[in-house]
Length: 188
Image (cartoon, rainbow, N blue to C red):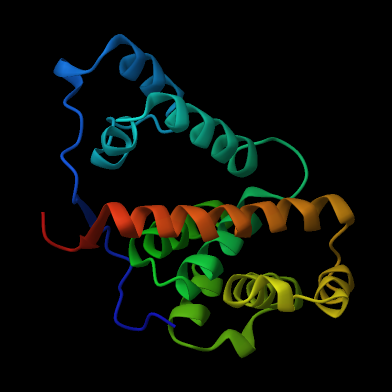
């Protein structure tokens, strides 16, 4: 668990100098247009865009997994991302996706239970999603048909399960990418 982390937004500090928007190449400027956020272009995006082609591929995949309409609802995708980020030790992503889950679910009961290490009080669906996210993140090859059966028993269909697997799996990569490119803390 991450008991030392609050839900206060963290600041990510890059180890590689981010591309300055004013000095970006036309390819980098074009690549930054695929950013899903309606916020300013972050230091993280400006760090990734050193390689505009891989940034576009990464972001298109991320957007297709996390922001697609239909299938698994967005709050459940965020819960999967939260579980993966906790296991992977990515405090920045854990805070972002915990806050997003609270916003989408319109309550903080699930996130509070997780942060106060009371996952045992989660409802069946949330518990199954959280358990699966953690299991798949610790050692993916140890996830079993019983894990999938638990998701089905909690009311998930095959499309939702595949969507959850995608959300968890992309955070196995995204968390590691963020870790090698910088670190997060409460300081600006």
